[in-house]
Image 1 (tube, rainbow, N blue to C red):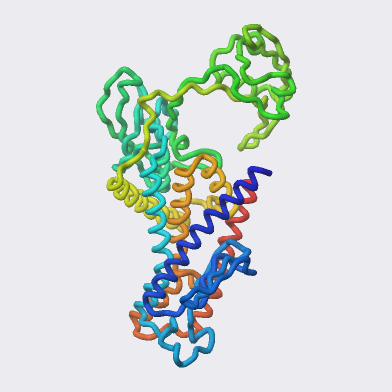
Image 2 (cartoon, rainbow, N blue to C red):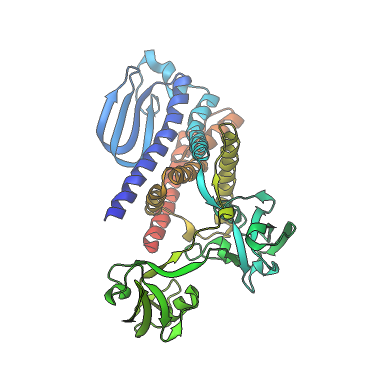
Length: 456
């Protein structure tokens, strides 16, 4: 329940910030173009707070935080007094109307840049993207590793963290090939290999983002520090808790076989659903024996596996692999601009791949997934939350630029037609377009919500 409330609160905060940025873009440019703004609303429905400013605009916070709007004086909507006609939106030039409508998505891009600038200025703890194995019969099998290697570029694009690697790979879904540039870490391996670039054949590369990341789907083995057999945590109501296992116990033997490594232990547990397992543990210098019956559970592929509900102690990351991703006041500007442009390009690519079929509609996410992401990123700290809302802000801006008549992009489409033809698009044609756009948008929202519930 606490996790739900935290995710909900984080979602409302994130969405409120992004909606305010978007609508303020419309509001600010409309005012500069001499348009009278009657209402600036964050949310829909009944107002829970309202105030009329000195400028005559009514500022409102409404109950349903799933959007917002800027109501401008417009003769097409209501009768306008003669003395205010020159302040009506519809009386402005087509280029002024284009500026007002496009200001919302542009404000989202500017906000994303500002959030990323602050994130880079604060700094984020990061891990270098190092691989130590590649999987046979995978696109990455062309890479023969003799020691851990750091990924420094993806198809020519420099990367410094796993998050950047992931983002770069996602942008190449559906491509015939991907190039990975690797460099050695002498401090980790004791070897100094030259920088090498490998071309991965990705014509048959497919993966389900709900089950794996593009990194592991390519067959790349992520380097991780060693695992200590000392138990770090025991899940509540798990088989381990019922058997009396506690945090701090150290694994010594499993079914009479000496503990060797964590993966081998996991294999034994997963293959023993509803079967008794005998464990020897070291507790405060004394050996004890316990019997555990792993509970049966379905894995993502529908296979029945055993689960006991314990997690081991993770060894610390090597110092040479940890670094603080931060920049100075000036360098943060360049880094934020570069990351914003990357997010814009990747987002446009993903929308294009939805239409070509390279990306399934099952990957669309709705408000539930966004709420979960907001809660998770907020729980990690401010810098992670800033990165999350920057990503959502870019996506919000791009979605609003789609040429659907009910969105900003649809209005812009009509205005550019007016620029070309020299006359407005007929009201009847616009009305038909709005109905079509609303139907398509509702269909996409329905698919996204269905995906959300399926993930739950």
